Amino acid sequence: MRGFGDLEAAIMDRFWSRGEPATVRDILNELRPERELAYNTVLTVVDNLFKKGWLVREAVGRAHLFTPTATREQYSARLMRDALNEGGDPQLALLQFVGQMTPKEADALRAALAVYETGRP
Image 1: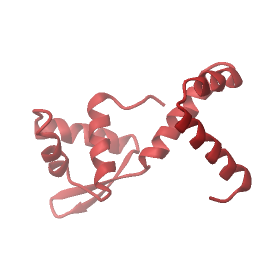
Image 2: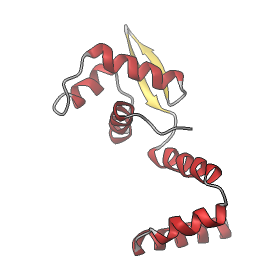
Image 3: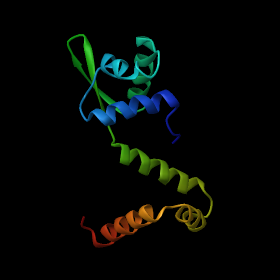
């Protein structure tokens, strides 16, 4: 799996930040202060994200409401999983990864491993 392109990432960020379904127009209006985009451009990217399985849609009148199929954290986990699969020796890749962590991130990793090992949050 490849990561999102620049506009795909900006659009998904809006969906994740909203926490509720949105129309293409909603997303366009949120992006407009930062970027000058045409409605059809956003529509095309949202449709591509739908076709790739990152969004589901529900017809509401003449419009569609779109909702992400995964959380931001699930997306990040997929990227990390794919990077680990493609990174050669997993132990060496993890060692390099851990070596780049901040102390706070290392603490979060330890806590996640403890939850995983005990099977409860």
